[in-house]
Amino acid sequence: MFPNTPRPRGPLLENCESTSPVEIIPNLFLGNVKDSCNYELLKKHRISYILNVTDNIPNAFQHMDSFNYKKLPVEDNWKTNLSSLFPEAFSFIGKSFAIFREISNEIVTFICKLH
Image (cartoon, rainbow, N blue to C red; front, top):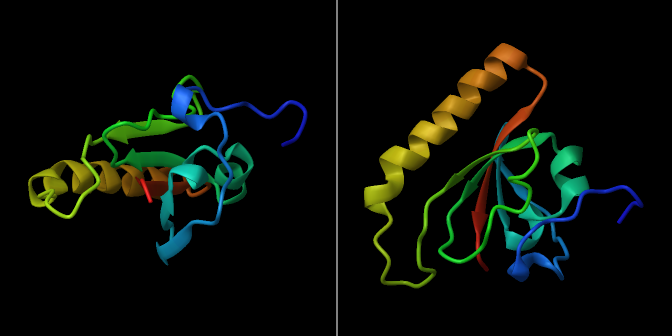
């Protein structure tokens, strides 16, 4: 990390190493917890809206004004029914895209999954 790079906050985020998020469609990325706590990676891809779909991972940079979070607590297992969370998730993603159109400078949404 660079000397003055903000560090993620939270006990589960201390040893984060990133892989790389995947751009699903233009301006919509899918990544994991390691990606979501890598400040340089988020800035590189101009990610400012983060949808955290985990039950136990904190929002790494919630203490910073440059990131907007929506946390949907979901247990990471095959039995979890995600369909009830779709309206809230889609609303957050839609809001981020609307803001993106206004600003046209920031990439909007990053979906975090545990594994």
